[in-house]
Length: 494
Image (tube, rainbow, N blue to C red; front, side):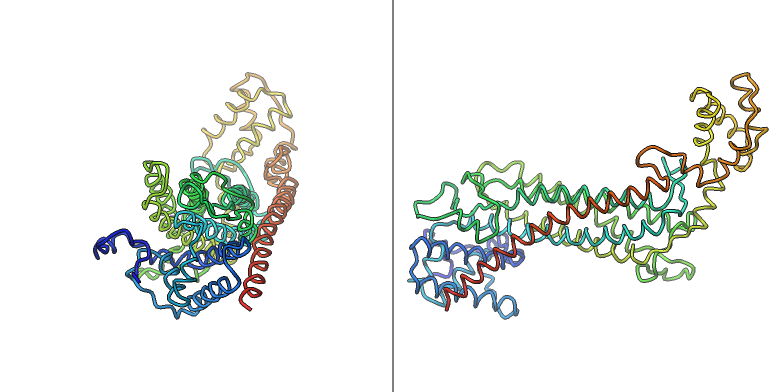
């Protein structure tokens, strides 16, 4: 019998150079477990539909289990004369149990719906891994936030000191971004977790299959109903890479912050030695290489999204070989995202916050200018635009930040703008001098006041818990399907 099961209609074997060019065997090992699971489920369904008998299903499942165990123990011998993993698995079954039974393995399906089901199962698995990593990272960030509610921090716009804040408030901003990403993953997961199996090549099959049963055994939430849509659409891959790209952009911006803040010019944070390297010649240098590479490798994830768009955009409706290159983009992006999550978990678990340096940056700036302007608005009924001008002129003519708190100079600036003498109370000056009071006056929701920061931490915790419940439901459904599958396989083999 021919080695290549799919070239029966062709007289000449595939050219060796052509084989190397089109082969996806290496990348296919990324989905080999999913391919075997999908094949097992398809054949269990064929047995339940009385298309296979007890002897046939037992031998097929036994052969597939043998192959799966060999792959897990790295004892499988791969024949690189195959284009991809699918005919390799089928041929291995046939070699084990013969063509009379093994030849029925592929009844009622095509490599087209087979590839799609493999990818959906694998993406589902990787989305759950990434979600689990993000939840762990968020727990670390929440703990860091709780410990820095009173750690003063300059808040920046245009990389210039803008307003007084606290480090906890800043960390909470990261957490909120990650939680929104987890919401997006939840939505994408629900669209990925649909069953294309049974669509066959493109137009379905005359074999009496049961698509709902394979959905149940694979833990899918339903069918990709239209057979063309099931084998032709790759929006679920693009959408997955979209959320990875967004996450990579978030990671890159965080990395940029850490790089800047770890410099001696800022010195707001210190990265642990185990996440830094040193200069080969400059003994004083401690380089944040891990964070720099996070910033760099994030661009690869964004690039993978763009490349995927270019692959998909010109493909007519139907199945084409172009699709196989999408696996490379998925593998690359997933590996990068998981590695960055691992790095950030370590970095934020060991980071040191230089509170004194952050406080010095506040004291050595005019960062309380807006607080003073709003005090004049609230306590002396000065229109904000005039109050803004008063403080702007005051700051412009001062040499030292502490002079902004000089009562006489403030009063002089007020007179120069509104042409009216106002005697400032001592309370105004003392309020501006007291950072806690300045923050507590920020009564708007989501501000960095102590009350709002604590409330924000509580809200973020509850938000995380609600998303984690949905995540556990996903895990439970996949687990239950696996238990059901394994029981059936064990029963049918025995």
